[in-house]
Length: 293
Picture 1 (tube, rainbow, N blue to C red):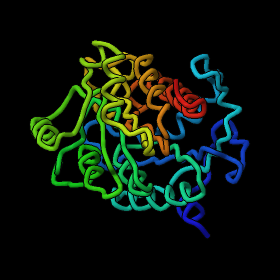
Picture 2 (tube, one colour):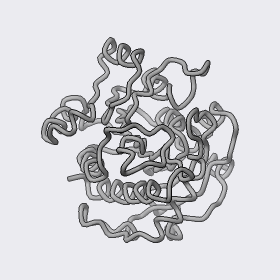
Picture 3 (cartoon, one colour):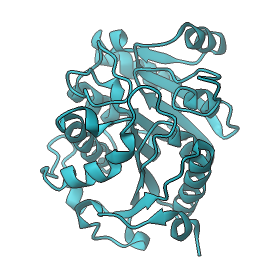
């Protein structure tokens, strides 16, 4: 019995998940956990909500030229639920290790951002891009060293992580700003993004290595609340959906080894944020399949 059999339970499968695990390139895993959410919980409902919404969206992408229904993916279901962030991170690490060990690309639907730590820790030498309004670089938050607000800090401490890059930052704490500056952690602010895509692409290319695998973590609060109001920690002055998909498309020209989408909270809006997250997921996988822009 492997870790997938041990820690993953069946659920409603995305688009019926017609492919078998052994023939799939992408493995979809839901992680319904929001145990450390401190403002608006509810991201635990997102994996099931995305699976429902995606069934109602058109699956062909005019951006990538890929039809998601033709992509070789397998939805294995949801991680078993736990009240412990440490236990969730441990289970995610073991399941993603098994997925990657078979040469597959894990695609994780959260849930809160803490899960990213387990996914990244499971992979060999890796570089990580956070698409997020926040740095998540606190060393401790509300007496906890492992939570949604500290996940990027914990990621920087992993021996297999060669570099990190934050894109879409607009809401840092003073502690995080000082830490990022003192450690030379590169970041692109929302203001940078609005000043021109070529500048941002140049920044990405100067900080990432095309020879090394890349993990992409998409926190839905990178979008402005006008586009994604149903997130755990909304911040004004964000980017729009098209700009986010453009950035993902460029990142997909790198060697993407894993992807997650986190922090949507469907109970806080009328379904708009889950529609956006579902579309972003379709486009992201399409771009990875097509090799980026």
